[in-house]
Length: 282
Ligand code: MF3
Ligand code: CO
Ligand code: CO
Image 1 (spheres, rainbow, N blue to C red):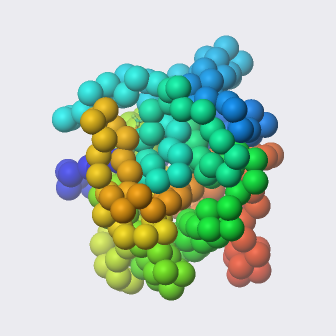
Image 2: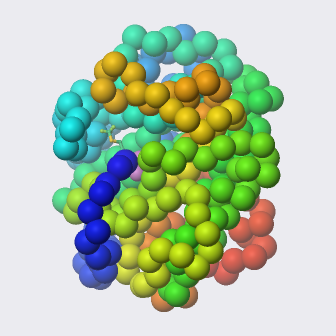
């Protein structure tokens, strides 16, 4: 999401952190729930209906996207975002039928007891193409490389730098117009978490900050275009785009990934080998 203010980054209380652990785990569990339904022949509208019903009737959560209306936008009409193939982000669920090989990002934000949990994953209908699988895998590694930089004293630019380096080394490009964001009782708050940049620049991290890391990586050029629905963002050159998202707490010693669930893909091997940080919430 885009933000423009220059307010300082809030430090969450212990009570806030407890609430965020719950909301974030519930958001991840919606992705676990929907995965078996993502098959050729299903519509994005049906995926939205299933998630919406699960959130409201099983979890007792509120889908944050529904009627979400940042300044300059029209209210988002659905409960989840479904971004297929060359859709970068904010795809609106509808009549689109998934076909074999389609790549889809499903982005879930739930509200529980006033706290927001925000996470997204890539999925494939049927068998992925080699190209789409590679783009998704590199984007997943970009997210985790960014996460691996999170600790007190690090700077936001450290996160953007490793993401951009990894994406561009693979021949891909980083979307500039959308970024990660602070999150808590508010869906999108300070700071902006850019997915490109230079080490040692931008804000210094401190324990108790919570923000998302959610790189959008294009197989082709980085430029985007907005569709007439006021929300859907596509690549300008129609190349494939991928995105993964976690919500992260800065701890005293590093990070805690809050959007954890039994069905989440495990971190890449380089995380297990080089980090002693917990990735699972208590
Ligand atoms: N979940 C998205 C994010 O990661 C925001 C979606 S806004 C919506 O920031 F209104 F499109 F849902
Ligand atoms: Co999201
Ligand atoms: Co987000």
